[in-house]
Length: 101
Image 1 (cartoon, rainbow, N blue to C red):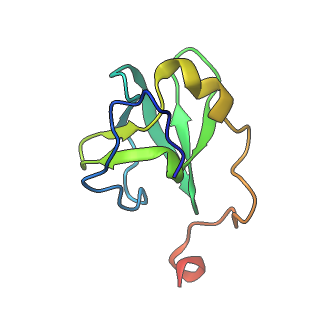
Image 2: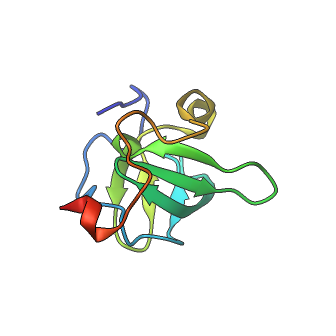
């Protein structure tokens, strides 16, 4: 999993699956609020950002998913390099149960 050497979170209690985590707040390793989870497609999730364009991140960026929050491995200053305009390769674009089997 990608990690920044200066990251506060070196290990994860539970990264889990983000399906069903819509609306959960997302924080960087240095404690800054990014936004909330808007959508999940396969191994990517969309960050709902107030007053800025939304973007996608890989679930590999998740250091901790504690149910009420998601914490990333990356610090705030490193997020721009990890953003995607669309979910990455290998996504189906359909999160229905029929596609998750």
